[in-house]
Image 1 (cartoon, one colour):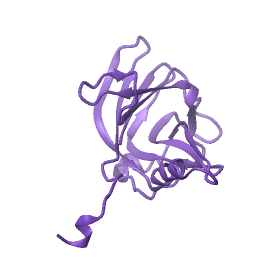
Image 2: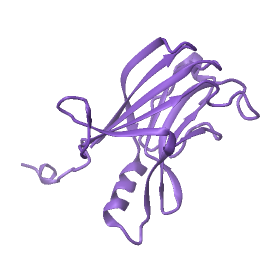
Image 3: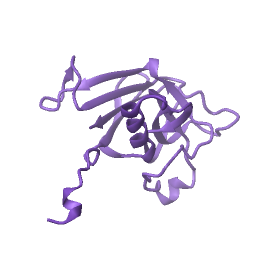
Image 4: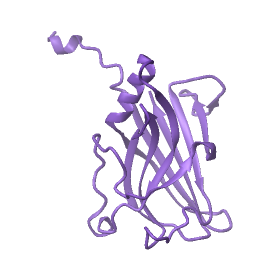
Length: 185
């Protein structure tokens, strides 16, 4: 046994995954991309350490889901792989779905159903309904989405918890994007 084998890595199993379903104006699914892994970033681990440490660190839970346009160049080359060192979305003006508009539930890992008591899996569900985000606007030429991340606050600064780039989602004004994120601890 090497000395490295004796080192405990309590957050090594921490991961995230997401599923996007786009619904048309009648609520019918247009497509379902299935479950895909997303990247847990460095600041998530720092936030967890802040929760455990407590004062003088102030750690605030999920503030919302940031969605961004990414870069149109990604449409030709494919979106870049997300990096665990990502600190913010590429879009400098992302849309934030606030926590109050997210559905947060614990998931029973044995059944995949919602649990009334805390488990090691947290589900966050966001519905970006018709006209959300309200793009095009002064910062966005289209309403196309290419990236997202959950955000929280650590010592008064907004931080990214996870990050994912994805193929372009051309969200028309009448469609609804249902995004489900699982964080597995």
